[in-house]
Image (tube, rainbow, N blue to C red; front, top):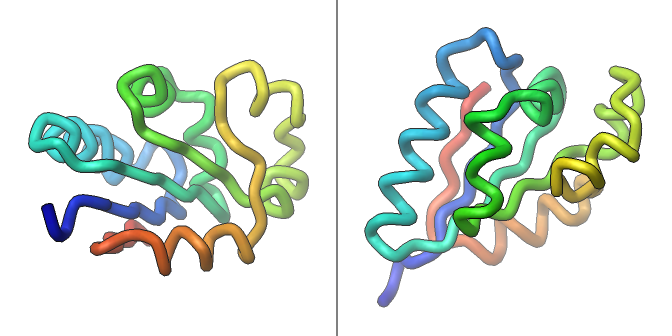
Length: 107
């Protein structure tokens, strides 16, 4: 099916309502058979500490976060590994952009 891959860029911190919207959007996309990839950067990397978002990983959502931004915010690599978030670069994000059919940004 064309349009089967959804990409999401999340740059806002967990207390922003964007996190809730991203979780619901991912759940709806998964229910309709779409692949979903999330890339978190800026304060969005703090979302790796939130269960609703991390709970999407076992459901099939691939979540990556900017290694540079995580380091700036003192998020240890051990935490990323423990919760299943991929440490990635902007180069990896550019690959996600080229791979997905649609990209939605939450900034």
